Length: 380
Image 1 (cartoon, rainbow, N blue to C red):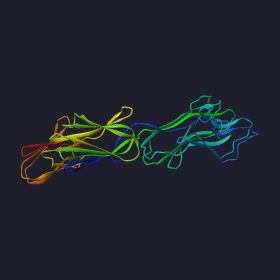
Image 2 (image 1 turned 120 degrees about the horizontal axis):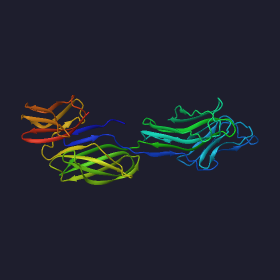
Image 3 (image 1 turned 120 degrees about the vertical axis):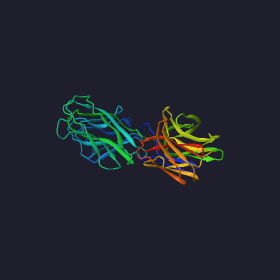
Image 4 (image 1 turned 45 degrees about the horizontal axis):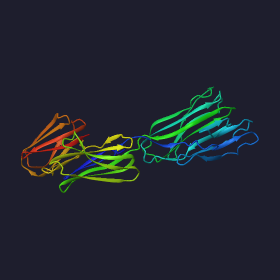
């Protein structure tokens, strides 16, 4: 994700940042509920057709395809590659085949987990060199990323599970998951009972949050790029940037993959510095918070500071040419003094070096013409 950046503009302190509220959601769950999907049982007298052959199964959007390119052996036993009792059953197939999902849309996903659960059939799984069993995933139609399951002489019921966690798909649009195998001996095979893909970072993505003076009020507005399970936002206000109270609750969009805009007007704000943030609550009651935004209202409202967050330097833009003494102090949120500056020249802008200041959130206190102004800023 892009890093956040902040912009001050005289009356307005604007934050523009992608801010994500994280949770998880299953986006693919293989449908093994339709009996007989896949290739039916066959014997020497009724072999399947020559490869390649394929058949689609399951229900959209969690449908899948079973296929083979090598004709299975016709050795007289009941070869099987089909859905039975809610499982994909592979037994004595006598050749190579594969099962894979349809393309799964991950264009709005950052990270995901892949899990599959299964067990072996028979007592001598993978007991010859040509036999194998591999799980795989494919991003954007590229090459398969394979995880072999290596077994030898295992008894029936040995787990053949698959677990990929935190896979970065932020640069991908689609993923396909599946497995491939070659099973030869009678009564050998696998039962695959589940195959799921879970998005672990489908965000409520906040792409801007700003405050501006609106007559005798302050108007807050924000915009989301995506929302998943978003119940509501709570607009919160503070006079010191630390202790917040609720102003208003705004319903969220629930689930949305298009831009949504919101606004709220804070009537009769404090005469001085006002601090705002958003609390986001999902349908499960989980809460997350946006970064804090501050705006000066009333006296000294034309002071502005930038960039925010600062890296090596912070610039203070003054409301008019100043020929007075100006004292500036920088405190952390616990009230500890970190820096002091004094200016006596006639200036329109003040440059504050901050390269040696540790990363964090700070208050900037300015005293000029016997008036005090405070600003909240972030140091990278």
